[in-house]
Length: 558
Image 1 (cartoon, helix red, strand yellow):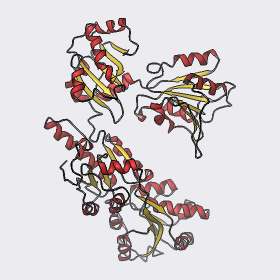
Image 2 (cartoon, rainbow, N blue to C red; image 1 turned 60 degrees about the vertical axis):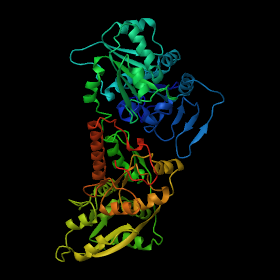
Image 3 (tube, rainbow, N blue to C red; image 1 turned 30 degrees about the vertical axis):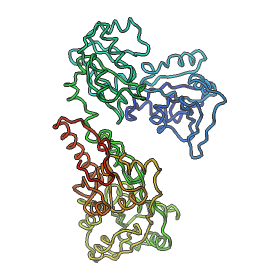
Image 4 (tube, rainbow, N blue to C red; image 1 turned 180 degrees about the vertical axis):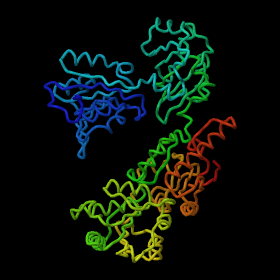
């Protein structure tokens, strides 16, 4: 049995340590074995740059130590922080936890053997008889070039040498300087030119192609193409240096395979349509989960800001009577028009000790895919989901008219928000159904987001905002202010666009149909067209937020 599996045997007198490579930055590059080890950890000791990547895979109650600021944090609903009496290095933290019989995961960036010098800590474990294992990670020197569009080898083959500029000896520089193979150099932004000079001094030609990538595999990634002789000037002209952030780590690839012409064709990551765009999604994390995943697939950085909060109805008696009517056979249909409606009914079921079996004999309708997924998670497979437009109108198009021969009961239970429109009710009545229109929950304006987020919204810190309803427009402006005029405004449909324009916003993108996923797709198409136009004009590809902001209310074209 795996030593870090959740159903593990009794913990040995001396614990177990897993040295785990968390990869170069993209959370999706964690291996399956790494996720399994994190799930079985009692203690997580992580470098600060990978802490957010790995801690999401740990169980509640795990003790977390950030090696950048040695303090122990218990991750659960009542988190507490215990500051050690004196600073301790990572090796001592690992050994102390292991001596206590804990299952320790020691997470480092990249790969434990190539990027992190973890061998010393492993030797300490071995000397005390503490068992350990190594879970390799994708090394920065391998993962970053792949994301930068720089293959390290091709069909012809070539030597590939990895050099850490911080510890490279004169002999090392001489060996790689006289070679014609590919050289992958780990260094810092302000030391790239010095490393290039070392290679030229050792024999490499000044016109040898070179790429430099910072924040590799993340949506902050940026790559510059140059030569060994021109890299200093390239970084200066790009206004990258001098900079107080010159200490940032970079991966430089030296060799013909990093030539700019080839990279232009292979740069799959940085050429994503919304690469690096910070996109505001005015929904809760639960509502925005699949939408945010879709935006990330386009290279965007979604930021969820709830604009509404959901509260129980002021008078719950109507909802209570309707739920009892479900059990006693009062209804032929129940129609769910939102995930929140599913949640409200589910909570009322749990209050009465009911479960999905109470829906037996009742037909269930869902307004769209997300609502249907919420029902399936509840244990209910909907009988009707619109085949076309995912809206009340789309639901009515597929809803069967009441037939007294085939429908023994003529009543529909419609649990919904207090501010819902009458479209569905009127349409069902027209089809011959009686409707119990019940307020299942109230929607109220959410609390304002943090000051930093409000300033980013008003100051042009977001590249785009997705409005999925008129209420999200009104509520976002009400709690955070009007988005800056450089921000791309994307709306789910004409009604939402009209509300946005009434609030003085320029609408740049509209979904071809009222679907959040079509809205995200339309924004991606907009970003791709914008990128293509910049490249055709010979201009640098920039994000909307990188434009120099003009007057607060001045209209601009994007």
